[in-house]
Every structure is written in structure tokens, then in C-alpha cells.
Amino acid sequence: MKRIFVFLSVLALTMSAYAEETVVTVKNEKEYVAPKSAWFISIMGGVNHAGTDVLDLGDFDDNIHGVGTFEIGYRFNPYLSLAFEAQYNRLGSYSLRYTGLRQAYVKQYRGLNVIEPSFQLYWNLVNTFGGYKADRKNNFYLYAGPSMGFTVAYEPNTHQFSYGFKAGLQYERMFKRGWAFLADASWTMLSDKMDCITDVNDNMEKHINVQVGIRKYFGLNRKTAKYYASESYTNYITRRDTTVVNQVEEVAAKPQPTYSCFFTINKIDLNEDSQNAIKQCADYLKANPGKKVTIFGYADKNTGTAKRNAWLASNRARVVKEALVAEGVSEDRISCYDEGDKVQPYPEAVFEKNRAAIMLVTE
Image (cartoon, rainbow, N blue to C red; front, side, top):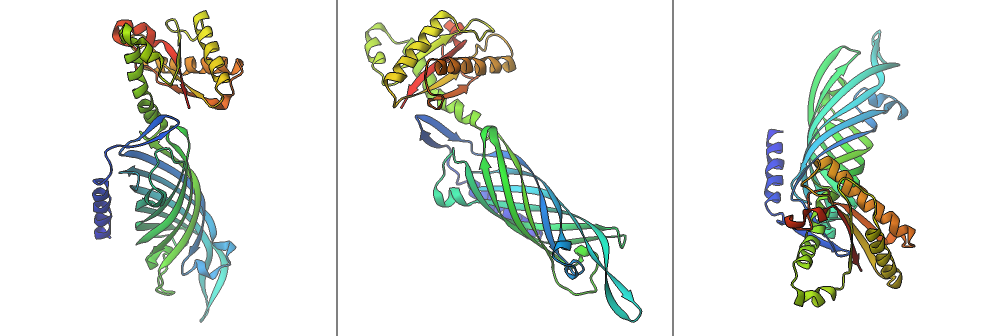
């Protein structure tokens, strides 16, 4: 088992060395940059069907019981991840009883609590065979690894240790901010001691688990993508504001019109100039039905806390979006990103301009 674990670890680390430094996909003129790695945790729950020496004696319904899983892992690249999980299985069914000289099976509940720690190497089938996309929402994983079982039985009152192998297939549906829904089916095979009885036969113990749950990635959310999405735009804003007079016509001819709304310190209220900018943007979008608009919300990093500035940036983008909708722009043509104070589109000399929401028209 130690050799298997070492092999899986070396394989994951070797494959991660071949990961691209930066993988970029472009969608709606926004760049999505994939982080090279990310930690994640998962929680799942469901049912299992156990097959052991004793439990096989019961009916199918008697072998269906609960299962719960906690997992912590590390994504090396878009193709391979390694995780450690602790799984709890509650088993209970027929017990074995001897009557006189004849062995008889009596329907008597027997409790088994099984803790199964294991290491799993995840292989992303969709990214491998379908090509990597940073904004892909649906993923399928094939996984396998060594497993152990620690059994505590109420009848008889004994403890056992077993070892074996686990494999499975997992579906992942990605949502915003690194959250994901999981649907998982796995098959586990352990040595004969899992049910605390070894004198019935020498077969390996096995069970099938079906679970659903959630997963949280840390550092693999849309915040990362938004930062890079606005970085090129920030450079454009800087160039626009520092352009010399004889280049104004060239800047104005850019195919991506922008409209800016500026706010006072610690406020999200729209002033008259901002309302005029919103109306101009709305009129342009109505005249160009094939265009969309992306709103970037900002806050000045020279004042306030990071938490407060994040709130200001988010709500500045929100009020501009609501004003555009009120002007007759369809909500599905509007995207919002809040940059907080991490990105400053205007230079330090005019830092107060960073209390802004900037509307960028896109195709």
C-alpha cells in the first residue's frame, strides 16, 4: 500500500510539472486565466450497499445504509488532483448465530461503524479529451487510490483493521466563487476483516457508495478571472487618460466605447453627470443591438478598508446596472465585475477618480 501511495504522489507531481504556465481562453472579449493550482474541500453524503460475509446473508434492502465523506485535496493543474478523504459508513443487517449443532442465520440487527480513510488521484476526463477551458462548468473525474477500513462493531464488541482499494466516477458542476455541486459513485474493496468475522469465508469485502455534496475551491474562483479580465482594460484607461492632444482622435476611434460614472467618497449615489453617462451608454446600446456592456466597479485604495471598498465597488456597479435597466437595456446584455480596491484604473495623481463604475461596450 505504501508503494501505491508513493507511486500516485510521484505521478501527480510529475504531471503537474507539464502544466502550462498560464492558460487563457477568451470569451466575450474577457480573458479567463487559469490558476496553476488550488486547494479544495468537499463534503458529501448518500447511501451505500455493503457486501460482506455477514451482510450478504440479508436481503438487498437490509444492506442499504448511510455514508458520509469529508475530503481535502490539492489541484495540481486542470487535469490532475490529489485528495485525502475520510469516509464514514454505517452498516447493519443480519448477524450469525449458532443453534445447537446446526448453523442457522437469524434476522438480528447488528451495528457496524466503519471509518475509511483513503488517498485519491483525480483525473479530469473532460479537460483531457475535450480541451481545457477556464470557464467550463461541467467536469467528469475518474479517480482511484489505496483505502483502509477501521471497524467498530457493537455485536460483537470488537475492532478490526482492513486495507484495500477504491475507485469511482465523479461529476462536478461549477458555480460562482469556486463552489461546485458533486455527484459521486464509488466502489471499494477491502480485506476480509471489515465485518469483524473471518471464519465464514475468505472473500474480499466490498461496497458501493452513491453520494451527492458540495466542493469549495480556494483561489480557483471567478475573482481571479475578473482581475485578469480587467487588467488589459485598466491599461487602456491609463493610456486614454495620458494620451496627448494629437492622439485624441485615434483614441476616440476605438471600437469599444466607454462611459464613466464617478462617485463621492464612501458613497454609491449617482450624480447628474453619472446619469448622463448612463443615458448615453443606454442610447448607444439601443442603437447597436448586437453590443453588450460590462460594468467594472472600483473603489479608491487610499481611503477605507479593503472590506468596505469591496462593498462600495460591488454596489457602484450594481446601481449603474439598475440605472441601465431602467433606461430600457435588457439585463442579459449587462455583466458586472467588482474590483474593490485591488485594481486602480486611474493613476495616483488623480486617485479620487478611482471611486468609479466604468461601462465598457463589447461585442
